[in-house]
Image (tube, rainbow, N blue to C red):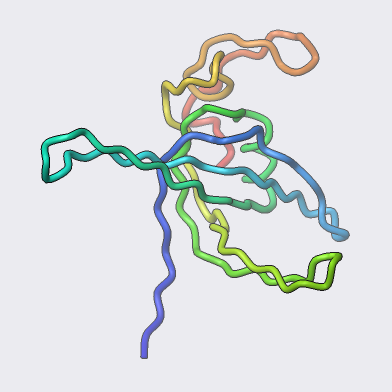
Length: 141
């Protein structure tokens, strides 16, 4: 039997990305996405729901996401669903699904304040110096 594991999501970051490093010094970034769905119910009322998804990226994509994105900004991710299991400090078994990001694309707009990254104009980096906009063909992915 064939297997296929592909996830495509477009949403807004629920928190600032958190960059860490594996013992091998490989960068890892964790972030959350909120994906909104709006529809009209059978009774004609407007309905809405939000799905919250944890995501993780490795390597150069992890560094890029950490550098240019923050809470509230939109992002398109492509990846695979992974299942993590661990034992908590109290001895209980824990598990969760997460999306391992294999590819992503910055999106315009969003409610996260100033744009950082492609098409956002000049912005200040974390040290207060001016950062020029990044042309789309210079984005490292």
